Image 1 (cartoon, rainbow, N blue to C red):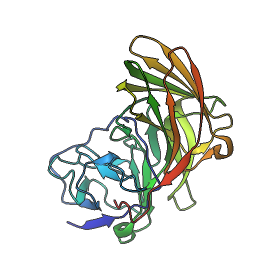
Image 2 (image 1 turned 90 degrees about the vertical axis):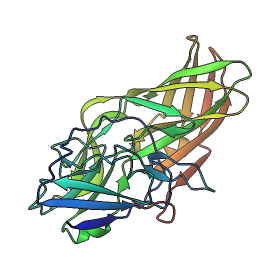
Image 3 (image 1 turned 135 degrees about the vertical axis):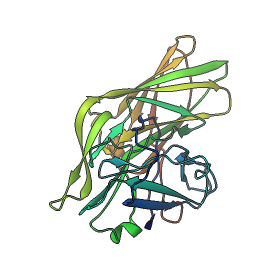
Image 4 (image 1 turned 180 degrees about the vertical axis):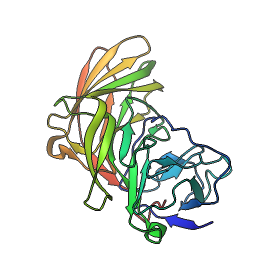
Length: 296
């Protein structure tokens, strides 16, 4: 059995919940391929880890999968999650001439990923299997040193409240009509390798819904939303709904940050939740991952 180590250079993070594709868990064929994905933390994965300084680590979780040329790996077992490295095992991938890896990918497609229509966020984090990523190589030897590259950007914002308010859900809409969820195709170069460009590929919408269930207080509570990297001409609007049905409207003004970079977290700061009120929030900071922060 061959073992390959993948390193990922990541710039920031995101969240949401793509559906995981079914794959056979038993009877690995004689012709197998294993990817050993190393992490510098003992925490659990592809949700945001605890921030350390200016670093937001991405961490592997139980059940995570990679897809290789559209073939799903065996799901990551509980005993392999949260360790310094995790091995993803594939079968039925022999004879490859191009090695295209996807995370949040679609089975039987080597270039399609899903940005979920329904996401979730709590404690300023996002759910596992939410931030689509990719990697590519032209040989098995090259696959021993591949960088997983994120395809989405993350919007992060916080709310406080002087009264007992629970945020039940957040509906986010791109005011310019850009697609922010659904299937997206990753472009390819002439040799069939993924090049990281994104285009809408079906079931696309300009709005998504984030489940929260977060009680607010005088201490800021943060939320994260993953959107595809790209240009958003008019920014975003969000309807923040409380458990009592009261709605606050928020406009996320991207100003000079109309083009959101892949793997970058855009922090919009904090605001007070005002039932039936409105607020405009602007980008306060941009934060990134580096190879020193996390390796896959």
